[in-house]
Image 1 (cartoon, rainbow, N blue to C red):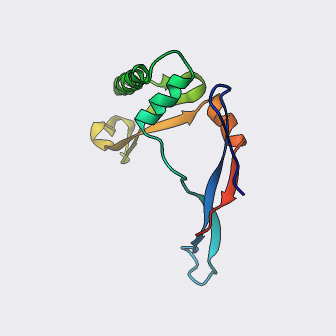
Image 2: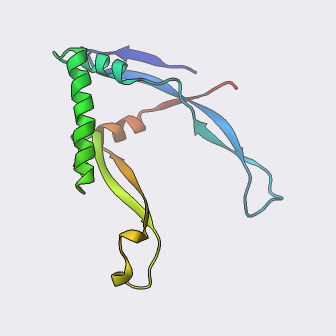
Image 3: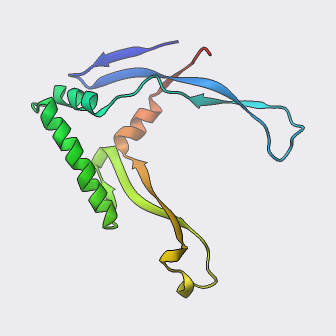
Length: 142
């Protein structure tokens, strides 16, 4: 099954997501039979140039203008995250920094040396959550 609908001016896209079956064993029971789970695969990728081109089709800005805005947005979001802010981009979602670290015996003993790594958490907004509910999947032939 493959579904493809694309209309830039009306912002209506329907694409299908390919998936494959991946076998996994139970790590606590080596005698158990393998079970198979779906895993989403990618059908391609879109780079910054193509993204800027598509954004420009939905507004009066040129692809170069859109490219500059996207590059600037990355810079501004990065700086805001460095300052400890949550960055909320409306219907797109929000970004914030999270850390992983080691334990200490008391709250007073916890310091920056306990932090072992940092990562960025993305929480999808309304538009992305709605899109997730509308996805169509098809099994990719391997």
